[in-house]
Image (cartoon, rainbow, N blue to C red; front, side, top):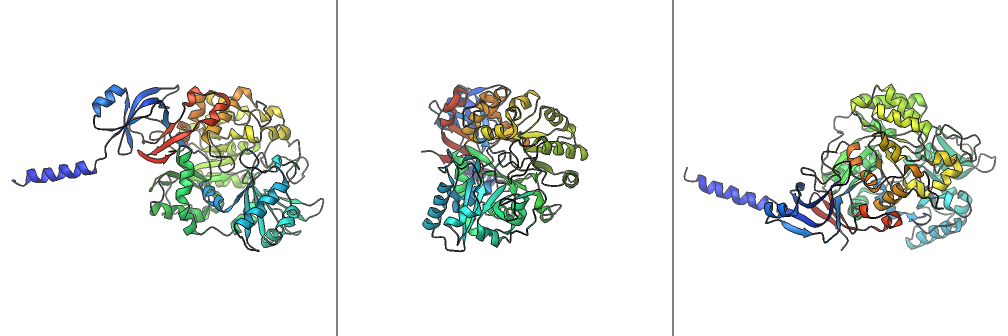
Length: 560
């Protein structure tokens, strides 16, 4: 018994060595996002990666006298931002690609600019003949020529390289002749169901433009992957991109089997310090579906596979979104009486949806057009799911939505992940393609919130920039490139806009009790901003700067 006091002393010393000191934040505008209206507190205390105190500064100083003190000096502090839909793997791949975006994302204004950018990239990177030259962000709608690039344009400058332009929607590409030959796409190639192969004039000769399944099945699956070693090297740089915009939670919104393997290795190596939610894509479901070693809904070293990603139409700006009324400007390949079409035949979509639902998987469905949304609604009913089941099936984008569909979302427990950046980047294009009345109801946040729906808002990176302040600006202003207010009645106040980047995304992945708020017991995931968004209006919203991003109590990004 005489050794017991010594034993207790040793245990006490060890516990003091391993216990982390608290950090106390004060002196700024601390917005908790806890509640239906804005609530501010004077102080926050973090310990061991979680929030342990929120309240008055005087009480915090008294209760935690030895805490590390961080004076915010008037700056704003919020829960960190959550990416509700994007493509994290794109942040890694972009390193080896050239930016072909139109302003303000890039500097391309014409086909000549594209040609020059491709040649300069090939020369500066010394890409040998026969290898790939790839550009991202290609947007035909913003070019002076007001047409798609063709293989002829690309052959003119890089005939000896395989050239690929990735459409800004992520749902299509343009290939030059050498790349088409590599893919074995020619006059005799049949257009796959749900896809588009644009043809020269009235002939069968491909122009180089491939959309939807023509891209996914004929090209994407064949492309040479970046080496695992190179991808691991770029992980920190990619995570820093997210952290620099105040995100501590990322999403890979259509994860291929090869990337599943890579993400698992990155997690095993503890290379992730931001949370990554991955959605394995349905096209390869036989590689992971119903496998004992593949677990959904549980984090392992910051990696979680949340649910299955389905796609049932294409992009609005690419005119492959599936809509009830025909496009006023025809199809992307010159088709007349064009509505777009489903990626899968409806019966196939319904049966696959039910298969995933019956296995308890959360389903995230890409559906832009109202006709595609109708099929998601029908598939949910076909699977026997309604709001009482609390399955939280997410309809990604929900762009060209009809008011009556919101009532179905409420009944079935569907939750929309909107994309208000479209109002700026392609709002004028949508007016031209489907008419102002329908275009004005794109991403109808106000109507959805009024119905009691919980929503999120996303960038779909790298379709548009990660910048959360740009998302806040588009949600509150809905201003197009040409200055049109697209759907004035769907503009929301700043607090509602912030919910789309914090509490909404947390709810959609069943993490509303650990993320999205500054609240006792929640993760200490914070962002410090130079200005309080609640005090900023109009175009100044876009100028807000991230000073620090904090994940699990640790600073993962600092502007200084």
